[in-house]
Image (cartoon, rainbow, N blue to C red; front, top):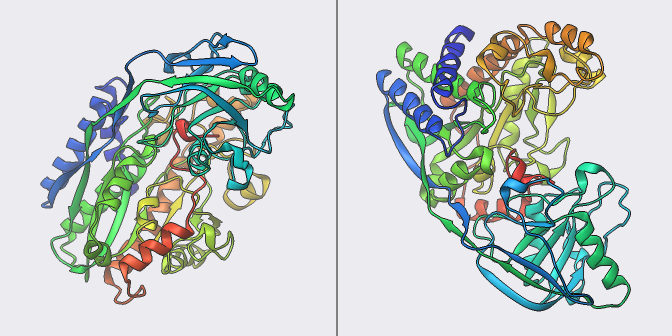
Length: 516
């Protein structure tokens, strides 16, 4: 395994994006071309490869929505669409995946913990205790805040609401306008995301004892759309002990995603090629997985894991997640499998601590420190964790700024994102093999000269990241491919039930539709 072998695949993925409008997002021709590239590469290496299709429905509005205040004052609010995201000219936008439903003259009941003016980071709707008993049969009014929109929306359903108005938090300019975001697939309630002004008006009316009521209509339909995951296995190895490696094949629409996750995709391709070329026989079967829809909320991986039979689950020993391993301002981050740092609610199923130990010990034995990170729901391990399958992996970092302590451990630039091009057009082959552009650095707006110096200091750093992460991943993959009884025996149905109750993930992927 060489870095050069991995970057050859990243170069090819860049070319795929260049021929397809600069992106490899799931709903684009660039994704289909990426899947075809992976499949043909593996077939040439001698693998039996197949597509497993997953459904990522496309939501569309069949008619304009309606949000009208009936009492205390008759008033019709201005509707927007996805194209109006963040614009001050509209009052509200329906959530993606909301159904076709109409509510007439229904009372509005706020959660108990709305704060106006907001100090920032309110927790409205984040816990079931936030919803008063009067929410049942009402339109729930929820303030944007610290937890995910999807969590707020799910809690409203559980509280018995018949509709939802989430309003922007207020306090800063970016927390004022209406926005377009996603509800969970198949969401059952009419739900909209309004401006701060709409929410404040309804909230003040409620607090004044004016008993506000609204008419609320959304007109949406989810239409099935099918896309491929790519699956390949080694010909040899025990089929009752499968070591799965997972990368996501899609990018965001903004760019080609050559680090996110062209790095994990290319690593797995190179590993598969070199494994076939060597003729080495693993004791346990290795399954390579490339998922789509990760940037839309882990759609492909969750569909794949959810549709595994209990018998198939019992055959999978583990999942090794390979999402983002070539970040230019990287840190060596490892998922906290045993919960020793972030608690059991942020750990993996039983056996995940073994994966963490193998990964961290490889680095520590070479004098390289690493840091634990929680299983917070931001990558494709989620569906596997929910089925009780041990999971783990490494992560070079995304949008979080690097701390002074991390600079001391890993080098790099303090205060800049671990991946300065995260979810941007500059997540390219030239960035991975060279340096990020100065214009994407946080300091560019105030000090372009400093930004240029910082960007230059990161030249070659993504390749160093790739070298270090490649080594520990190869070690872990082959260790578990050769190990016998590395994990506790699974009674899969019980494990899946326990995992589903234990893991309430903070996120469902990276994509902004699922943000806070």
